[in-house]
Image 1 (cartoon, helix red, strand yellow):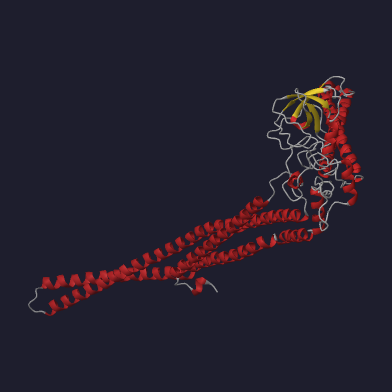
Image 2 (cartoon, rainbow, N blue to C red):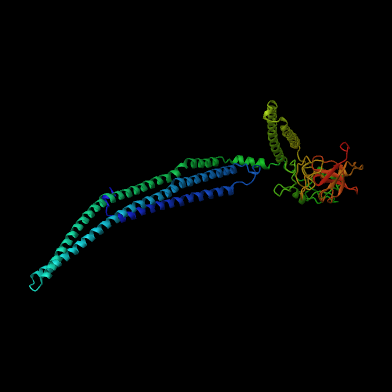
Length: 563
């Protein structure tokens, strides 16, 4: 149905309707803007959430458990999902909101143009009507004046008292008014004919054409709304496949959680390589009693050991109390910290082996990079030598020399770490053949416990100036038993001095066989560190004992290795 034929008299209502249509379009555009802002904020919050829970540590410190790796995979998928929400917002902004706002401006301009044409046509028709109405009113007035003049002429003509001049004047007035009425009539007829013609054109040509343009404009507005509705939905539909992949990735990450593998990683991460502690020996405090006790007394000492004690007599060496032994076992307590060393000797054997292997692999990769760089530089040098115009071969020599120097340093580092690794592996293999003793004269597993009571496997303390470490904890140590100290210090011939050392830290020397030293005190070295982290030293007063190798700065005398 056409607005021009059906709504020819509804100009004001069509004016209001077209304005409502544009307002509705802008309202929908505002809705789209708020919708895309929701998407943008949602994506931003998701990205902030992912950033908050992503690991901030280096790759080496990240946990390798499948549950953690799966969670990080879910975070990555969620980050991709947030990116898709951002794409939805961008698509809505570009193809819906911006398009609607541009189209709204075009509609406003077009509507204004059509309405101005309608108002001009209406104003012209009103002007024609006024002209016709004025001519009509004039014709009416002239007719009334002509009637009056006619009545006046007829009255004077019939009056016997009226003079001839008065009658003649009334007659001329009557003729003049009648002529003016005829002219007004002709003018009114012309104006009426003109108005009718313009009115027909107005309601049959001008207004239908204007209303038709308004109708087309409104229909195009409706079509544009439908298109943007579709674009609004398509913006969401386009990202559904990728969002589905993100969700599938999350499900895959969930399926990758393996509790058995995580348990194995716990063992691999914390396995120390130490053996469980041996049994505590029975300590018989009744050896010094003169009587044998009553018949009802039950002795816990085996018969053979009692007889051996009678023959040998009571030993005078001090024996560690149960309280001290408890302090030495940190199976369920807090493990004493040790200074962080280059060779990882502060770590348990198994962890030390893994760290050394990891470092060797890293150094090997770096060495391979340097070798590739050297080969590339040599090839470039050959090309320059064959084609001097391409470059100067001598300009590459400093870089080649630097690369070769780096390679030598890396090889030296690899060799040093491989040496430490072979020491660890050798100790682990030898430890597997050794079993702890439960002899009354041995209170701890041989080679396992230090004078300070902490387990260690420090096998490679260097005989050189160690790096100073602030506030060192108790170092790894030599692990002799109590009788070993007695036997060594009962020697009549003193050991020769093979070097000297300066104490870097204070050491209390509370345990049997250890030597107390003050910070900056100078001691004589009489026995080197045998790989257990302890060095035998002698004070200037003649007192001897073991001190932690990592607590002293050692200077060996020349030709003292064979002493």
